[in-house]
Image (tube, rainbow, N blue to C red; front, side, top):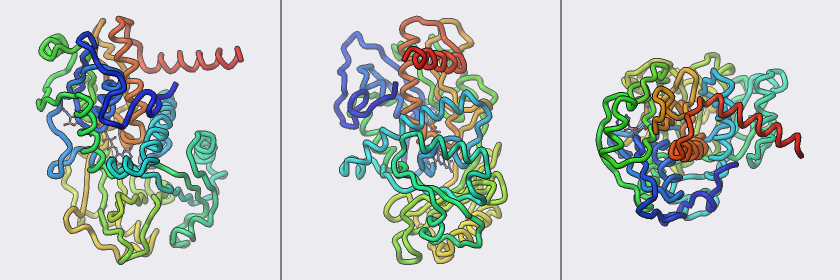
Amino acid sequence: MSLTLWKDISPLGQRLREPTSRSPHILVIGGGVTGLISSWVLLDRGYHVTILSNAWASDEQRLTSQIAGALWEFPPAVCGQHTDAISLAHSKRWCMTAYHIWDGIAAIPALSDASGVRMMPSDFFFPETVENDPAQRSKMTEIMASGVRGFYRGSDLIDERGIDPEYGAVDAYELMAPIIDTDKSMHWLMDLVESKGAKFVTETITRDLVDIEDSLRARFDADVIVNCTGLQGEVLAGDDTVYPIRGGLIRVINDGTDFPKVDAALTITADAAGSANEIVFLVPRNDNILLIGGIAEPNEWDLNLTLESPIISRMRERCEKFLPGLKDARVDPDYPFAQGLRPFRGKNVRVERELRRTGSRIVHSYGQGGAGWSLSFGCAQDVSMLVDEALSGAPARPMGDIMTHDLKAGKSERRRR
Ligand SMILES: Cc1cc2nc3c(=O)[nH]c(=O)nc-3n(C[C@H](O)[C@H](O)[C@H](O)COP(=O)(O)OP(=O)(O)OC[C@H]3O[C@@H](n4cnc5c(N)ncnc54)[C@H](O)[C@@H]3O)c2cc1C
C-alpha cells in the first residue's frame, strides 16, 4: 500500500480529516524535511500535531534539508552508502511513494511554482556499457520496472547534453525525476503544515528521549513522540552509529548567457570519476541557478570548506572537464557555496519504534543520509503506520522484522493469486 496524493494527503491548506477533541496528539521533534512531511501526513490523518525544533528553515542559517541537492534518485543514490539489504529494500519502496507524490505536485503549475518542485530529465552516465557492470545493470532493470516516467537509454545523451567525449562516458540513461528548490519548498512546507493546524515550539532537546519520554509527553500532552532530528539521532536515540557525510555544492548562474543553459540533472557515478567520494553531480536548482557537485566525506563534522579548498577546486575542475561549457560559469554572488552534513547511520535509514523501553511511544525517523527528499513521503507513511501501532498498544518490532513480515505476506498473497 502506498500513500496517495489527494486520497491520503492533500497539498492544500485544509486537512483531509478534521481532528476532534479526542484525536491523538503527536509531538514531532525536528523541523527538517523529515519532520515536516511526517507532520503533514499526520495532520491529514486528523491528528493534532506540535512540531518542536531548535531551528527552522531560514535564509540565514540553513538546515541540512535546505543545503540538499534535492534530486530524486532511485537507491542506492550516487552518493549513497547502503550497507544493509533490508534498508535498501525499504528505501526502494519509500522512494517510489515519494516519486509519485512529488510528480503529482509538480503536475499542477501553480503548486509546482509555490512548492519549488519540478519534474526534469535526470541523466546518468557510465564509463562502460551498463551490461558490463552487474550492479548497474540490475539497478537499471529495477528502475525500468519501477514506474518512473520517461525512461530512455542511449549513449546519444552524451552528445545531446554537451558532455566532453574525452571524459570517458560511453553509456547513459535518463528518467524524469523530481528536482526541488529546497529553500522555496521548505518555506512552502512550513506554511502548509501551519495552515493545517500544526503548532510550532522552538526548543532544544538535550537528552536521550528514552530518559525523558514520560515528562516530555506529559508536558506536551502528547500520545506519541516522533523523532526526526537527523544527525542528532545520535543523542536523542542514543544511537552511536550515526555519522555525517559532508557535502558541498557550488552555485552558478544558469541563465544561458555564460554557457548553454543546463536543463537536466547530469551525474556520473563514483567509479567513472575515479574516486568513491568525488563524483559529478550537476543539478538545476531553479530557473536561474545550477548546483555543481559533489563530494562525500564520511565523518567530517566541520563546515569549514570554501571555494578554495582543494577538494572543492577538484570538484569544479572535474565538472568543467565533464561539461566544458562550465569553464565560463559565474558563481552566484549572493550565495556562492553551500555545504552540509548528510545524516547517515551504520545500518542506514531508521524508521522504527523505540525498542529499548517496553511500551515506549517513541517513533524514530532519522539517518536518511543523502536521500531525505527522495525518501520523504515513504518514510512519513511508515511513521504514521508506526504511530498507529504505538497508539494501539501493539509491541514494537525491529525494522528487519517488519520487512520480513511484509515480504512473507507479499509472497503468500502472490501464491494465492
Ligand atoms: C550536499 C548535500 C547534498 C544532498 N543531496 C540530496 C539529494 O540530491 N537528494 C536528497 O534526497 N537528499 C539530499 N541530501 C540529503 C538531505 O539533505 C537529508 O537527507 C535531509 O535533509 C535530512 O532531513 P532531516 O529532516 O532528517 O534532517 P535536518 O534537515 O537536519 O533536520 C533536522 C531538524 O531537527 C532539528 N533538531 C536537531 N537536533 C535537535 C534537538 N536536539 N532538539 C530539537 N530539534 C533538533 C533541527 O533544528 C532540524 O530542524 C543532501 C545533503 C547534502 C548535505
